[in-house]
Image (cartoon, rainbow, N blue to C red):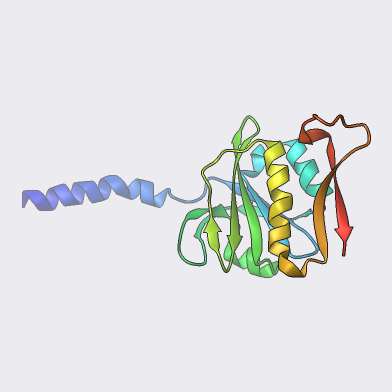
Length: 173
């Protein structure tokens, strides 16, 4: 009888955390005309430089709401992101997930139906996020790229300056 009460006690102890396991995060979905998305959470931590950058490449705010925990297409990895219904509503198959940790530090992952959900554990600053977003978008486009995002330094940028002084230009092919 004693083991039964011990199991019951452990079950009841864990019940409140299960009930409260809902999302404490809101997300913001940015979408471009190619139906690629960038999901950023928590929404309240989106800082102006990140928002301005995403809108400049050009992504538009498509939707916001309560983030849900989801796995990749191969049931590997999990993170908060937009609900599947929102993904389908906006016809987004491939997207980038950015978790803002604070002090300009972020984690970034990639969702692709073929690869699943890739979640590196490396923390990035905004400049590295900018560089990796352009590379990821080009990978999403594959070998049939109609547009490619490249970084070109502005005319006033010294050769040894960091990437924050660079500009993005869209190259049509």
